[in-house]
Image 1 (cartoon, rainbow, N blue to C red):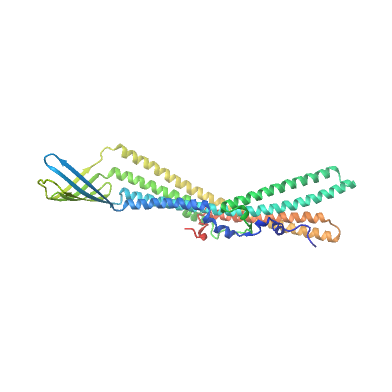
Image 2 (image 1 turned 60 degrees about the vertical axis):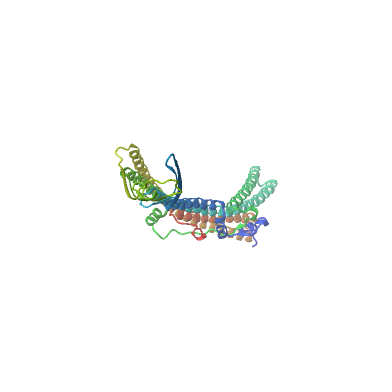
Length: 441
């Protein structure tokens, strides 16, 4: 028998012509790297990369030149040109500390970028399926409005014939008003869902096609919960970020203790001949080696000049240094705070994984319930159609059964969407890179 109402697919096909072209979920995901949020995350990472490059450059060889002109009464004048090269050679040099700090900052920037990309990936799925649900809700609201109009017509005729009370008529009218309100709400929700997805993708809403990819039923991970917890602790950005900050605190404490214990000592070796000098030196505290040369140019007078080698040693031992002692205590406190932050991050990660795992299990159970409800709605529709053919039912009963079937179809898709989003949230909680297939660096 020909159905009195179009199916969900037919109603969705009645969308405006500008939206007739379909939008596949995979195509929407491929557009993510060109979105503003994605590019903003990339720029933050690039900024940290530039800082590491600057730290590496500062650690390398540095060369400087200079000149000195002296005018002396009775002894002539002289111009001396000089050049100095320096290089951090010891592992505790300030430049080496800066490089290690910049490397950890880059690691944290990479984690933040992965977090931002995963959040954008999940947000796009949510917005995409929200648009599908909004279109399904609009189709259901249209079908419900048609049913309420038909029911009001029937009750009006019955009231005129004396077989329906005024209360029945008022109830039917209220149902129709509620259906009209629901239709307006569904239209507004659909427009907002379209604007939201179009804004994320950087498209004109009129260029956004109908979402054609249905949700898929996910499965639980093959690993047990305990194995998942261990994987999360080894991969989650928040845990790894707390671990990186702990390493920062450990290195800061080591640096403070080293500055307190290592004396300010230096050794230099030089050679001079006819006013020209060449010297090399090493500063133990800063870990920097230097090489300097000076050459007199165009001296107007000459004097007795020394020639030979020279060796210089200097040593300054900190005996009472309250500033350094305070720096050590501050670094120790920061280290304790970093350890507590790591422990808190691990506990939060474990709780988050357990919650996301439970959410996925609950969502999967909801799918089974929604499928059973759809089977019941299908059976009720077949029964209503059979009763109509047998002359024991009415067309409005078939219409109501079709609306119920449409509602059950919508509920099943909603359950599938929630399960798919719950599966993505679990993978994100485990520290997986959801955007690895998109070709991001």
